[in-house]
Image (cartoon, rainbow, N blue to C red; front, side):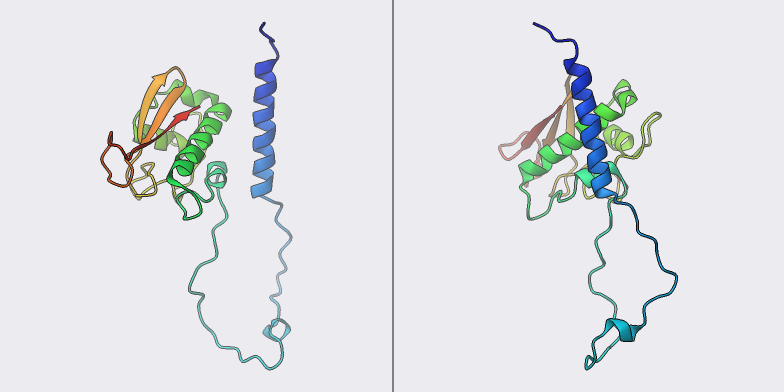
Length: 180
């Protein structure tokens, strides 16, 4: 038995959840005061102030929705398989919300990167150039800095393959995830 309203409801649920995630990762910015606080107001009495630069810059706020979805990508808190699954989900959301993206050939890493970075007609920036999932050549990479391999499985279905720690594809340590 086929229920005709399942697909529109699923699409609506994806759109609503994406908007909620967007609002969560992009909260309203409070008004900024033009007058900086006095150092005497910030430092308790008896504390000696010395000027220095912070050793670690503050974390950057995600600039694109895909960046927000990939927070924690390739960090010690995640596993390599979780990284690949997280990237597959981000790509699936991109394809769901950017309908025209799937009309262009998407098989090579460079094609996926261009589409996700908004370099294809009809697509907006989903990943910023500073995303942890991209290397300096703007290729999608795994946690070992190896380019990911994409393989089309059929209409709107792809396989993402990480060559694993050895960097050699199609060996025992490879990791695979599917989109969608």
